[in-house]
Length: 103
Image 1 (spheres, rainbow, N blue to C red):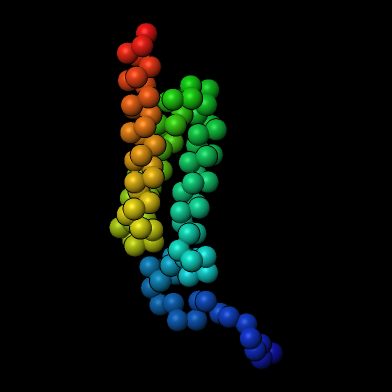
Image 2: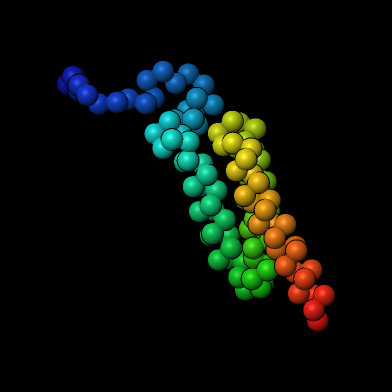
Protein backbone atom coordinates (compact mmCIF):
# COMPACT_ATOMS: atom_id res chain seq x y z
CA UNK A 1 0.00 0.00 0.00
CA UNK A 2 1.42 3.34 -1.00
CA UNK A 3 1.86 6.02 1.64
CA UNK A 4 0.29 9.28 0.47
CA UNK A 5 1.53 12.30 2.36
CA UNK A 6 -0.09 15.68 2.11
CA UNK A 7 -3.41 14.25 0.93
CA UNK A 8 -6.40 15.22 3.05
CA UNK A 9 -8.89 12.48 3.81
CA UNK A 10 -12.08 14.25 4.86
CA UNK A 11 -13.86 10.98 5.63
CA UNK A 12 -11.24 9.81 8.11
CA UNK A 13 -13.18 10.43 11.35
CA UNK A 14 -16.71 10.07 9.96
CA UNK A 15 -18.75 7.66 12.07
CA UNK A 16 -22.36 8.77 11.55
CA UNK A 17 -24.56 9.68 8.60
CA UNK A 18 -24.85 13.27 9.84
CA UNK A 19 -21.06 13.65 9.87
CA UNK A 20 -20.87 12.23 6.36
CA UNK A 21 -23.42 14.77 5.13
CA UNK A 22 -21.41 17.58 6.74
CA UNK A 23 -18.22 16.78 4.78
CA UNK A 24 -19.15 18.91 1.69
CA UNK A 25 -19.72 21.93 3.94
CA UNK A 26 -16.29 21.47 5.48
CA UNK A 27 -14.69 21.81 2.05
CA UNK A 28 -16.79 24.72 0.76
CA UNK A 29 -17.06 26.94 3.82
CA UNK A 30 -20.66 25.95 4.51
CA UNK A 31 -22.05 26.81 1.08
CA UNK A 32 -22.36 23.34 -0.47
CA UNK A 33 -26.01 22.77 0.39
CA UNK A 34 -26.94 26.41 -0.19
CA UNK A 35 -25.61 26.07 -3.72
CA UNK A 36 -27.42 22.78 -4.10
CA UNK A 37 -30.72 24.38 -3.09
CA UNK A 38 -30.25 27.30 -5.49
CA UNK A 39 -29.38 24.93 -8.34
CA UNK A 40 -32.41 22.82 -7.51
CA UNK A 41 -34.62 25.90 -7.52
CA UNK A 42 -33.32 27.01 -10.92
CA UNK A 43 -33.95 23.57 -12.40
CA UNK A 44 -37.48 23.45 -11.01
CA UNK A 45 -38.09 27.05 -12.14
CA UNK A 46 -37.10 26.19 -15.71
CA UNK A 47 -39.27 23.07 -15.71
CA UNK A 48 -42.31 25.01 -14.40
CA UNK A 49 -42.01 27.92 -16.86
CA UNK A 50 -44.76 26.55 -19.15
CA UNK A 51 -47.24 27.28 -16.31
CA UNK A 52 -46.26 30.95 -16.19
CA UNK A 53 -43.41 32.91 -14.65
CA UNK A 54 -45.18 33.80 -11.40
CA UNK A 55 -46.33 30.24 -10.80
CA UNK A 56 -42.86 28.92 -11.62
CA UNK A 57 -41.14 31.20 -9.11
CA UNK A 58 -43.72 30.53 -6.40
CA UNK A 59 -43.59 26.77 -6.94
CA UNK A 60 -39.83 26.49 -7.13
CA UNK A 61 -39.27 28.74 -4.13
CA UNK A 62 -41.78 26.75 -2.07
CA UNK A 63 -40.18 23.41 -2.94
CA UNK A 64 -36.72 24.83 -2.19
CA UNK A 65 -38.01 26.24 1.12
CA UNK A 66 -39.35 22.84 2.22
CA UNK A 67 -36.15 21.05 1.17
CA UNK A 68 -34.04 23.70 2.93
CA UNK A 69 -36.10 23.28 6.07
CA UNK A 70 -35.03 19.64 6.29
CA UNK A 71 -31.40 20.63 5.74
CA UNK A 72 -31.66 23.33 8.40
CA UNK A 73 -32.95 20.83 10.94
CA UNK A 74 -29.98 18.62 10.09
CA UNK A 75 -27.79 21.69 10.76
CA UNK A 76 -26.37 21.56 7.24
CA UNK A 77 -27.50 25.09 6.34
CA UNK A 78 -28.34 28.09 8.46
CA UNK A 79 -31.95 29.03 9.14
CA UNK A 80 -31.16 32.47 7.75
CA UNK A 81 -30.85 30.94 4.28
CA UNK A 82 -34.48 29.85 4.53
CA UNK A 83 -35.37 33.54 4.56
CA UNK A 84 -33.96 33.84 1.03
CA UNK A 85 -36.62 31.48 -0.30
CA UNK A 86 -39.31 32.94 1.97
CA UNK A 87 -38.47 36.42 0.68
CA UNK A 88 -38.92 35.24 -2.90
CA UNK A 89 -42.37 33.93 -2.04
CA UNK A 90 -43.40 37.10 -0.21
CA UNK A 91 -42.11 39.38 -2.97
CA UNK A 92 -44.02 37.39 -5.58
CA UNK A 93 -47.21 37.50 -3.50
CA UNK A 94 -46.85 41.27 -3.13
CA UNK A 95 -46.12 41.62 -6.86
CA UNK A 96 -49.12 39.54 -7.91
CA UNK A 97 -51.40 41.45 -5.52
CA UNK A 98 -50.10 44.78 -6.84
CA UNK A 99 -50.61 43.66 -10.46
CA UNK A 100 -54.19 42.54 -9.80
CA UNK A 101 -54.98 45.84 -8.09
CA UNK A 102 -53.95 47.80 -11.20
CA UNK A 103 -56.17 45.74 -13.50
